[in-house]
Image (cartoon, rainbow, N blue to C red; front, side, top):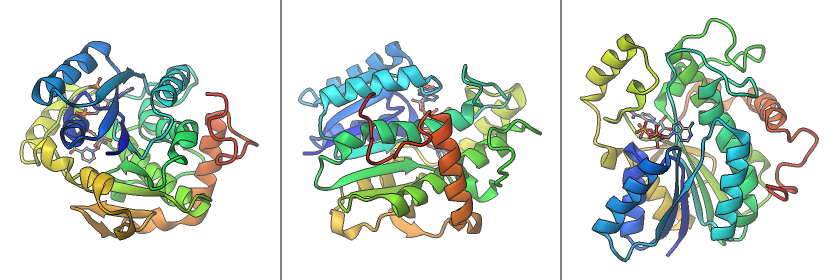
Length: 290
Ligand SMILES: NC(=O)c1ccc[n+]([C@@H]2O[C@H](COP(=O)([O-])OP(=O)(O)OC[C@H]3O[C@@H](n4cnc5c(N)ncnc54)[C@H](OP(=O)(O)O)[C@@H]3O)[C@@H](O)[C@H]2O)c1
């Protein structure tokens, strides 16, 4: 039985990931932006699996204070975390910023996983077989990297922004793996496939919603989309090589650009700055003051 944390577990791929892992007897904490939606998801799982050890924590991943509070709550509930699944994600047709001035898709898809990982490291390092799973996307193949435009200030276009945030998240996965001093802690990036969820219809213009609804209809079911995350969370640890990109439960190559170590190191420092961690050691001071 593992202690597992899943972000964005109230809907789509995240919900199916939580349902399956809780159904298999793992202790799962999932996050939900909306308390009501979180409770509904919890009730559904408990109805199906009355014995399930599953709970929900509210978090808005666009808000640093909310992230700190949620992580503090999670650390109290689970002093050891075996698996952290960064599943929550967003597509934003129109450019919007949080209070700190960070574009929302960059914040939710890249900055929040970076910060949460830092804050939850004290629990992840308690596990003899810790794993971090970043739900990514083949969209990153279309992502470009501009060190002068990390915050997507210029020439914003929703799909271009989404692709860049997913490339940023692959950089995070690889850079984490290079810097990680803990041999028992692994990190993976996952492409779930094209999956029929609402992600492209929530914060979307009418046209984007129309295109997404048409396109996603041919996609996998959310349960199928959850398969690789579930595999990486539960498979024997010694079979799994850290710092790789996974699709259909197999390692595959990510984009050529994603292997650029200079970009990854630059982005790491920049993101640490956005999280107020500049000058701090991401690993040594992990989460001391969440
Ligand atoms: N669907 C696909 O074809 C596809 C393909 C490749 C990769 N992915 C990736 O798969 C992951 C799951 O996406 P999905 O398709 O299952 O989408 P989804 O059904 O929209 O689920 C996304 C989850 O993230 C949560 N979330 C979004 N913004 C948040 C915020 N500000 N604070 C807290 N939680 C937030 C959502 O909460 P709400 O329910 O409140 O919105 C939801 O729980 C994402 O990382 C996505 O990029 C999806």
